[in-house]
Image 1 (spheres, helix red, strand yellow):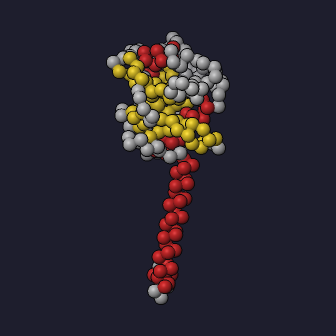
Image 2 (tube, rainbow, N blue to C red):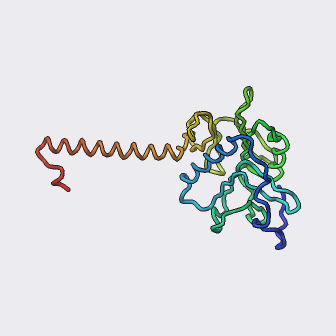
Image 3 (cartoon, helix red, strand yellow):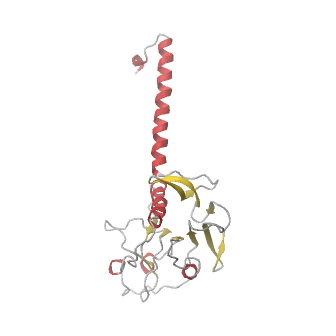
Length: 232
């Protein structure tokens, strides 16, 4: 793991570029992280000790360009520290290395399985997640865990991440009107957490179910000669 020089003259997040200005070449690089963040915003709505960055520069050395993963998750940091939000993630200000980094492999290979793996390993990122929808013979989802300074490929789908308190995995579903394989968060028993749309649908169904129960009870009271409105 790298050591950071915390001298006061180091540039702040506001003074550094917020990304590497490299455009994504696959819409999945935006949608997949966006879905994961949308689920977290509901799941951890009461928590303010986490940050999920998408296509944001992570600065680890003031003399080197930022690393810009497709997404990363940090725990133990302020979710929001002012109304301008974070322009970038600067390690000598945050003091916490992201616990999880996600790379979505596009048609333009960016060395996700080699150079980037080595970079995140050296940086001390606990979990490095790689997803490639183009793979046929190898797993499309890989979760690497840092053990004694080296990454070890984890087995299973989903993979439980005890230090984070979530599992991550992939399965087919519908998001943004697209039916395909997506990445989701899971609980320790392997149950998938619902998307925002699914949560709304579940709440609507619950309200409808309660309304039906209330109507059945009212009908039973009428059969007994009791006006349910008189009980209000």
